[in-house]
Length: 426
Image (tube, rainbow, N blue to C red; front, side):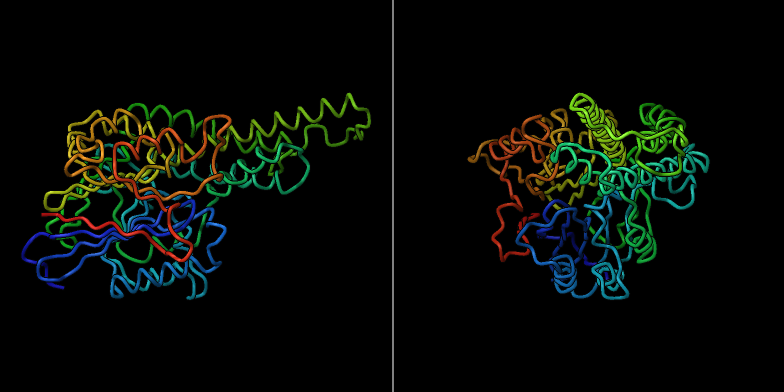
């Protein structure tokens, strides 16, 4: 396809109804009528109650129709299921099979997904040892998530339903999705990105400047390096063992396998047992929360600049990821953001005030060229209002509505597959 002679004149964003997850199709339209399409994430861990069972396949086919059977770029910000589960294949008939058939020219992923560590893909001074350590940590994270879910399924631990629900939701989100991961590795040429690198997408997205704000490499930030040392060498190596020792199964044998077992009958003993179970559940929830945060901090953060407009897509990047980005000169590019894809489905720590306060175009409804925001989410799937951890956070939603024009997938009608945002780039 020949490159357009001039930059794009408009952009259209389709925000698909995937419940708790992300799926965005970004279309750039050029003056000569040519189009470019970018699919940013495709996953869910909780469709809406009214969504049909084949919702992800419906979305994949709609993406195929909208892009005319050809994607230019696919972005998988990180490997959480609510961002990549739609890429899973199923004997040629799955939603991931449909996306693969669109033969994207490039597949953009974080450097942590690179199968081989080279200076070109990972930046200066990040070699095979660093990637090997990261891969080991990732394996242990998935094992921890699996043990957490197995522990609930076993029925051997009695915990409050709300606690079990949170544990299952986060655990399942972090389970390894081998089919989707493999599909992303083979559907097009992969580009593994990190803060400040050139993703080399100009050939496929002419007239569009793409800035990579995250994630940082281990070399770029001491914070990430220290976390890696602690998490890889100790925490994630020990986490599966801790689960097993708590009775969660796995590879660890019982501490005293031949000791007699007693059925606790007395009320006093039941009281103690119930609290031990609750403590174990809270420990497991703490582990998977830490796992969840680590994975989110590998999220790709992309800023698209086309014509006069800047569009920000940060995946689920959380505070540590943002702290590095905001400490560099590239942070100045955030001042003129026109559209913000709300991070982590409305989680408060994914929209840090230090980032939000840089958006000069936020303001009341009468502000010219007011900031637009778009959020893909679902209520009652993550956290709780009682503890102030609900996602989306009510405080953040209030701020988004007050200071930007918010498009929220929760507002879609039952029959609607997506919301549409039109952006004039001139």
